[in-house]
Length: 509
Image 1 (cartoon, helix red, strand yellow):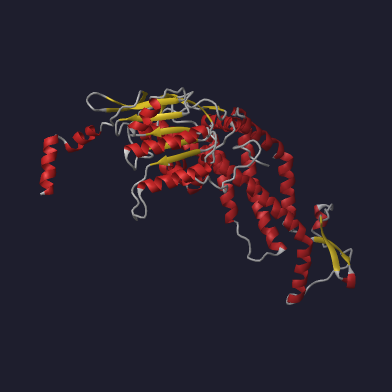
Image 2 (cartoon, helix red, strand yellow):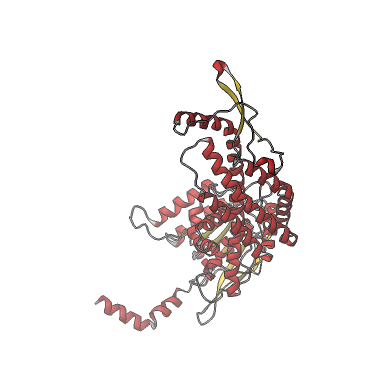
């Protein structure tokens, strides 16, 4: 049995390796905030959602498969949580069943029987949930899962399994056949089904005369008891191995079920947090790689809204023909927040989640990369430009066609002219390699160079600023300006210019 609730034809592998740039994505997009909200502090859920979000799907059909299951989960949240809790308890319960430290066939069989009885109860409950609520599911994945439970876990299966487990307790002893081999040594030890006693109950309570040869082992004959134990072990060894493999198989089923349902439980947790604030979410329209750039309405940074009390400002974007999106404008106007929102939307869409927006449509990318500014090297082993270029080199080694690169204040660690020249060369090479680039920059020469050479594949956005210097945190289509309005921040922080100069002079004195 396989749940197949994350992919049509393969199990979700929680131990699979994350992409090489996972650390940068987590840092630059503040993914830890997302993971915490989805996991609710549960370490297992944290591991599951982190693996799922970072392991992006690139096949739109595979993404739609998950989206359909997620829609069912959102509509039947209580049922999904019930199945997840059941799988979790089944896995945790198996770990609590201790066996003796020896690995004899008897000890393996005893523990495996206990484990199978534990799983039998869990399978019965899972089948009951499928019978009671299965008709409410509409997605391909969950309807297939319900049908599998109903067909493979029918009443005949449970009856046969209970009967076999009862016999494997050997409460009436063990019946073993053997053959004589070389030197009259026993070979071909085979466990046999015990004889059914067809006598009436009145006859059973009377002593039964033996019909064959028998012997008894004296109470203090340790050697004889050990020999009988070895004979018993040889007879049940194969059955013990088969039952242990069966228990491991069912444990694997519940482990995969817990992980796969854990992803959807994480989505339910996030949806609850966003719903408490009235933040919108949507199921994104997923397009094939290489098609139009993303378009959205009300796109916002989901990690930012999880940090602050009020709702955050959403933004619209229509970048269908743009391979390069340049975002300029006032300092602290919401440019970096907008860029993180775009990156989060890609990751959430490509793992089958909803997106933090009123609507979102975009083509899948073969890889998402970030190049955000960093603080100065505290060890003074290299300058900021050296560090920037090293990170760019590592990205260039891994990035490929139909990938997306998010740049936040890249090339700003040198002067305006040099930064613009480096930026033009790097961006030009990326565009030729069919990489889509989102660039937040204060380098006016770089932005103006692209603006003065009109091209249908470049979109210019600018952080809105009112005449009084206030920021709306809206990102709108607009040409780049030669100022980032740093004076606004100066006046807001230091107040009146003359007073600031006086204060600085006094401080210097």
